[in-house]
Image: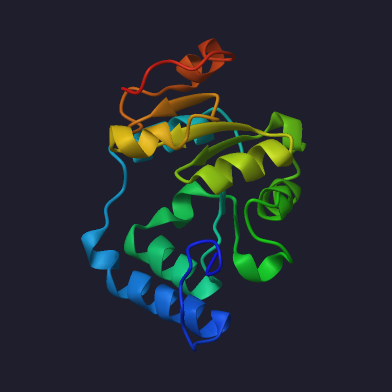
Length: 170
């Protein structure tokens, strides 16, 4: 990535990753859940669907996020970057997450906010929903099966209806 964007630095990649993770942790108080998340995931769980969090953050950051937002009640498993060899766009993290909940990849649906995550989901043989609050960001997620701006109004029934196609950002 440094080469791709022409970034000049004397720091090692590991140092840059650690600095990014540290900054992310410091900014957590400025972050909130997407509107409707709790109701949507609650509905999935009430209907017996397994849910998992797969994140390329390290386990320390993942635990901070889980704790801050009381997310443990929503997920059957958590998979972090330490558990896989290759990060997104490689499918490893999603395949590891699916294995933990004993669900075949083709039965999984990934909700993802980054283009590399959409690519990783597809490479894993999974379907992907893009999630973005801004239209400009949503345009970067165009490879997703469809795109949402939040979870408000999203239901299991709606997902089953949206098996194909890519509705407008909304």
